[in-house]
Length: 282
Image (cartoon, rainbow, N blue to C red; front, side, top):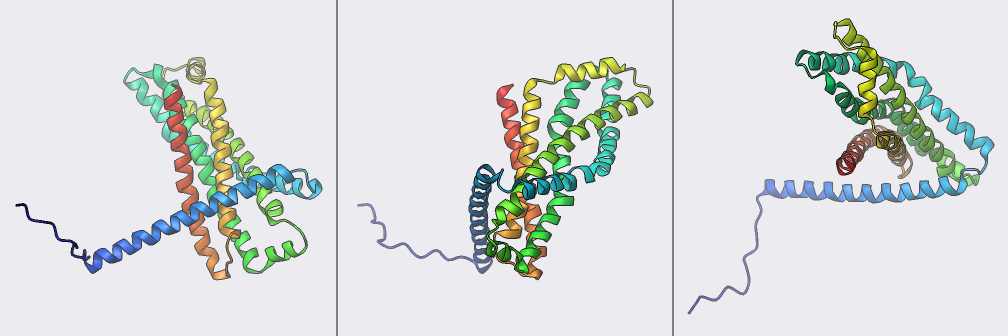
């Protein structure tokens, strides 16, 4: 006769180190789920306010949008120019030189479109805006929340999402799109200049002809969607960390760190989704 199994299994015991690790992982997962849930709700509220109240008080809100475009776009033009110049030197010029060295200069257009137009250009522009403007958003809004200015707006009957968040979302989305286009064009031009200075026998007409042949109409549409998604994501994350929960002045630095981490991770995930979409349509 086979032995019968015991009716009750002995309790599983964990080493104290394992228990501490499991507690840490559990708390991290709970914080992650809570953050995702809060961000989703904040995003839906922002979208609803943007759709329903875009033309409400236009004399007040529309100048705020222009102000955000200046802060996240025009004011960053010198830095974007420097990054585009460096990108042209480090990536494009050296890549064209190496392709020519191994007799593969006919692939220059495909490589440039894949690396610069689809990936590096949008990501560099988004990270620059996050570093220069996104962090400032968290500090500004977190300080306003800590000092009670947000509650004062609500007491005056002003919707903080409409007044503080919507202009930032629209302004940052449009700014990242414009900065990305500028960065890509300048980088491609400066990259060919560096390749020309290295005596690469590639005529301008051939170089830009390869770029035009490698580009598809989907690249223009997806570039616009990706940059707008980057801008909206960065604006929503930074505004959420600054406004969504009560803060004290000493909590603002921690909120800024969380916002940068969430925005970077979110931007990479959005970029990965677009990469998968590229693979599907090809």
